[in-house]
Image (tube, rainbow, N blue to C red; front, side, top):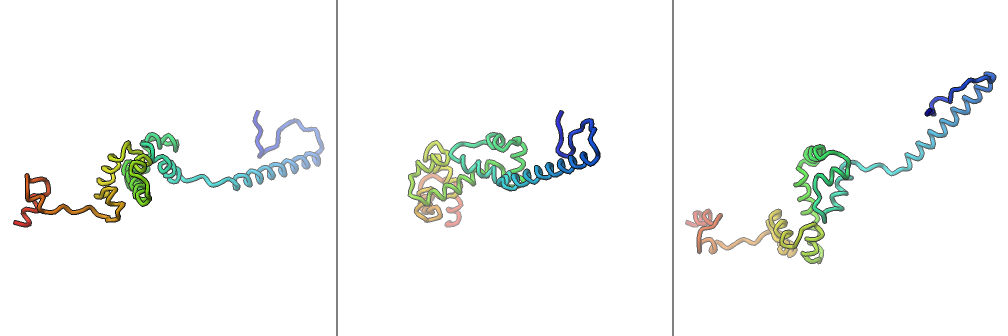
Length: 179
């Protein structure tokens, strides 16, 4: 039988009323002391991180892996559907876009350091530096090498290349502009 701190244990009592009053007062003091102790202990605990903080720290710490929405949902203890909807509502983008953006932000920081592209690719979870270079160039329009040089933009192809040889996509527009 479980007892509660809010009420003293019930039993047949043959004591005098003043003895019972003393026990009730003692019981109230004990209950109050336990509650103060509990409140003090909870106040000393660090605050629990928000769901957003937990998700972000998990994803940032696991960029070297190919983290899926399923992995994240298991970590935070919510369903995949809830996590997916949460990302759209709170972050304004799907989970996959958020992961790409997180990788890209980390890549730009790492490219500011003297590390090798192969090491950066491995750190970000790419199977080789070519996959990383393809991802980076597709996202930024600049290869990691050019980004590192600080140009900040992709080199422009000379128009002469489009005028010689077969017509490739994008060259027809330039021919019409010149013609």
